[in-house]
Amino acid sequence: MSLTRIGCALRTRSLWLFALLTISLTGCGNERVDQHQLERIQERGVLHVGTMMSPVNYYLGSDNLETGFEYELAANLAQQLGVELEMSTSYELRDLWSKLESGEIDFVAAGIDVTELRLDWLKFTPAYHNIEQKLVFRQGTRNRPREWSEVNGTIRVVAGSSHEEHLIELSKTYPNLQWTSTHLYDADELLEHVIQEKIDFTIVDSHHLDIKRRAYPNLSVAFTTRNTVPIAWAFHGGHDDSLYAAAVEYIGGQHENGEIAQLVDRYFGHVSEFNFVDTRAFIAATENVLPDYLNLFKEYSGELDWRLLAAVSYQESLWDPWARSVTGVRGLMMLTLPTAQDMGVNSRLDPEQAIRGGAEYLRRLHQRLPDRINEPDRTWMALAAYNVGLGHLEDARIITQRQGGNPDYWIDVRDRLPLLRQKQFYRTTRFGFARGEEPVNYVENIRRYFDTLVWLDDQGRLPASGIDYSSLTQTANRAEEE
Image (cartoon, rainbow, N blue to C red; front, top):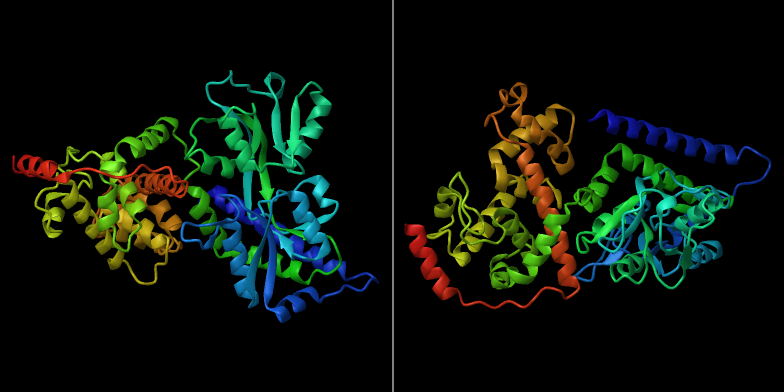
């Protein structure tokens, strides 16, 4: 574990212990503390959690199943309490606060950041994530401002948000700053308004921006408006601390066992690195190249998600059926000759054979991993093995275990794969030296491409497929023989 991660863990543990101490002291006065909220929740068998639909909080996936960072974190608490989870969605923050005040929901889990004003009437768990807040504009529409005094244009933010609180405070120092707030649109819609040039600027949380830029790479950051902003669950500031205490203990435990780090990585870890040129090129390829092979990815994906298979192919070959590397791997899935032969592929340059062979190879790697490795870690490790080989992946898992990490967690194995370059580590492994940083970048790139494909597919923005493979197959077979 890096010194930074150790420091964060120690700070988190201190906040957790402080919160528990605060709870225990609440009942030391003469005023009786009502401890019935948790009992009522367990009696009714349902935990009511308020949230707002967004890519970072809660949404319905393409299979119409509930998902999202806040949903998974709250679902694990509900499971620990032995109750069902019911997410109550609102479209405005003031509606969430009203539901919390009336008792319609038990707490708010909606990417809420801790501010001084909110601390006056809310109780927060220790932070489970820290983000930054960014001033955003559309690239190419104006010169980039680098500080508040250079902002030329109007900023629009969500009414009642911490962004509005910050602008109110900033207006005391910058009285000429032009900004408005709105109850009509959420943060996601305001980002789209920036793209559509309906507004000049908005302020957005960094993890939300990271996800949105996978589909809208023209969203550009002017500067960071707030650093290290803690995100936490918000509870009513009354005297019944039973559920709040359980939540504080739960968040502390999830930090200590690494589950929150896993969750953060699953939703946000791979999107934090942004490359404007690569993202633009990928979106263009989905429009101009992907339709040629889309039906093949769907036909041969089997139990794999076809969009994942397509993302692997783009990472391997940029969807170029004639791709060839200096090491001799070839085709859409960049198969080695021995692997192609094992998969029954006669011509690696034939798109249909290449995709069928690549899909089968990835499936076999996925199946050969230990059964105890759960999703999505299992898929990320199978992808790493596709790139570096199952033997080197196993070496990295062994190093992970030796160093006290969890060999079944991708985030822990990912940190150790680059060690396969160092003699002090690879000399003790079975398969020896490997360029271990390559599978790390490989997997993270595929995850970004996959996310973009899922979003484009959900939005109906992927073109229809259509190509006659017969002539291409004949040409590919001749080329492979040559």
